[in-house]
Length: 164
Image 1 (cartoon, rainbow, N blue to C red):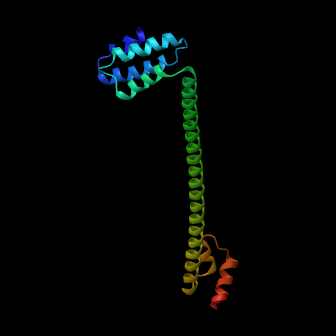
Image 2 (cartoon, rainbow, N blue to C red; image 1 turned 45 degrees about the vertical axis):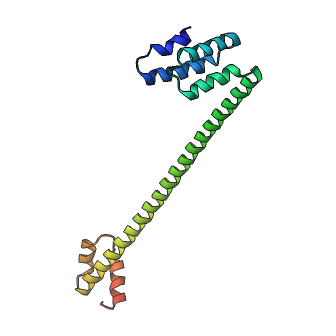
């Protein structure tokens, strides 16, 4: 009787409908078939003004089902739940693989950009050294102003330019 009356104790229609669905689900799990039928029929009768058609049809199907049909129905629902769970796991795995691939690609792009920046900086420093050689700066002055170049390297660049 508690199964039958409990959903009606809620104030809001949405709450009542939700509790009706919950009690129907619980009632379908009652092992004693006569208790199960009594509970389902009671829920159907007491909630006829509130119950949605889908839930009412579910109750009617459960009442009409033979034991074998109920077993098949339960197996079907379990298989659907398992398939849904496997789908969720597959989606989660795919999302993780996607996230890892994006992270790897981002890391690769950052490394490439960093390498390009280093090359550009080296080119700019080299251009700066070449300009200073053209303006007749001494190798010592250039080495003290522009980091990353030794006196020997500056002298080699000076000879290559023919400005010894």
